View (cartoon, one colour):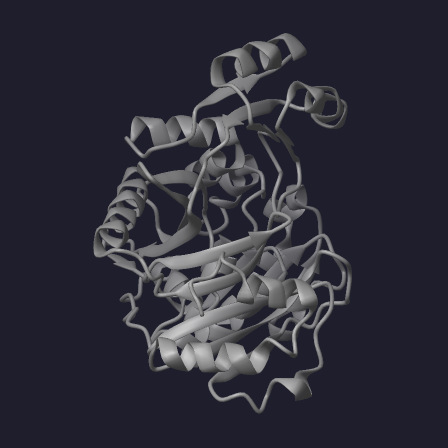
Length: 375
């Protein structure tokens, strides 16, 4: 079976790595000539708008994405070439934060207070209603902390408006959360759903740095997260892998956003679960039975940002697996990750003790800080 993937980054690369043992072939479409997934298949260098006309996609059996901002109209047109999964409607909802929040509201998935902002007058009115602090965000295209500004006082309004005022915006109320978490689930074409354990996630500068699974939370929170993500999958008649990002608060879980694709917070599933999110996504896309999501103990994932550390310093650590994406170093860029897998929490803590002196100061601070439930 041949799979076309729109996007040729590390997510496409890891999808292909999981699909090749199943006998799958891959074609990637990406505007970047150095897209790192090219090591695992054929790369077509093209803009998204060109995708429906590319001969290299004509013999694909399925088309999917590693990037949620491929225009929904492009995915609609590609439906004439091969089945596109997940479908364009899911991407359209995820691509506009206002549409996304209204979808959550309709499904009784808790969200922060929010308001549409199309003018400076709208922003002032929204602040009067929602209050401060709040977060001003572009409705489209922001990721990894881009396209947003925190408004802590009215003095922050003018700089934020200068930076973002030329876009359609949304103002969201600030959420006082204990920690962030994410639930990844996969829905097959027959409606069957499998969930991975909830991940405890730690961000810094808007970029995911650490993910711990299973999250050390009450069983009720885990069940609630599964309930919410299953509700979303069913409403969208979704096929494939989806992650719902959440805030844990005194009032319960509050939804931040969802990603209609495989997701960074579940990269630990490659080493930490019987079937990874990447393989299960492809199984769903190709009408194959979904795989077992049971964990192989416990897992901690560390993102490598900007440049890869020296591999030799880490490979002697028991239970640690190394993933280099083959990308050029660049500030703020996700270039790889490592996953520490152990039978129990004490094994994870022992691995952290071995890791902490090898990582950069920022990662070490997060590992040792109060944001992570590790001693």
